[in-house]
Length: 339
Image 1 (cartoon, rainbow, N blue to C red):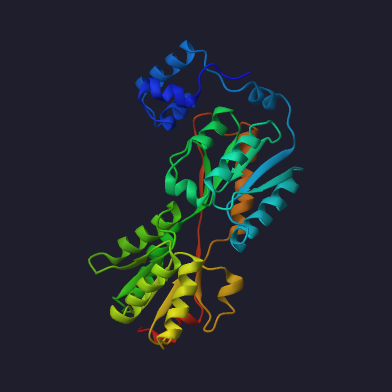
Image 2: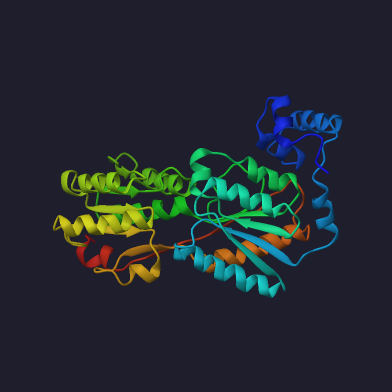
C-alpha cells in the first residue's frame, strides 16, 4: 500500500527541500528542533509512513546487498567491487550489482528496483548525470523506504546517509604543495569532471594550496574543448606542472605534450588521478594518486552492516575518509626538480 503522502509532497506543503524533510524524519542533528517538529507534525497529520516493505525488511533479512556502480569501464570501480565482494563474503552476504552507466534515468530505474524488498541495504556511487543535474529525489526515496544506504566514493552530496570516500581535496592540496616545495610556481590543473563533487573537491584543494599564486585551469566535459584548453596551458601559459583530476585529462595531457614536443618530466611534471595498472606502463610512467579502492569497498560494506544491524544510532551518519597516497613515478621525478 502506498503512503498517503510522499516526501516530495510534504516538502511542497512545508516549502522546504526534500532533503530537509528526510533529515527531519531521520532525526538528523542538522535540522533545528523547530523545523523537525513542523515536519513530524505534518507527517503525522497526513498519515505519512515508510512503505510497508521496509517494515518487513526489518523483520527478515535477505542476506543480499545491492551495489550500484556508475562506470564499469573504469578499473577503479572494478577494484572497489572486488573489495565489496570479499567483505560481503565475510558476512555471508551475496551482492547484486547494477551499472548506471553515468545515467540519471538508469539510476532512477535501479533505485525503483531496490525498493522491492530484495536487498537488506544499498551501496551506491552516484552517477555523473545525477550530480550534474542535481536531481536526488530517487535517492531520498530509498531512505523513504527506510532502506540502509551507504554512498561511496562520490560523497560530496547533501544526503542523510552514511558515506565512505577518500580525501579528494587534501590529495591535490598535498600534490600542489609538493610542487611548490620544489620551487615550481606555474602549476595548473586539468579536469573533465569539474561539474561533479569529487572534481570540485580536487580543484578546491589545488586552489587552496596555490595561495596568492596565479591559477591555471583547463575544464571541460567535451574531449575536444578540454584538449584545446590543455594545449593553451602547456604552450601559451607554459605551466611547469599539471595536476589532472581524472583519467581523461591525464591521457589528453600526455598526448598534447607529445604533439607539442614538450618533454615529461624535463619541461612538464604531471600528477594525476589515473589507475596504477595504466600509470606504470605509460612512457614516461605517470605519477598518480592511489585511492586504495579495495579498502574503500571493504569499509563501505562494514559501515552498511553496522547500519543494517542498528549499531549506528538513528539520525547519526558515519563519514569514513580513507587517506590517499601520492605515488611518484617518472612524470614527477626528483631528478628534474629543484631541491
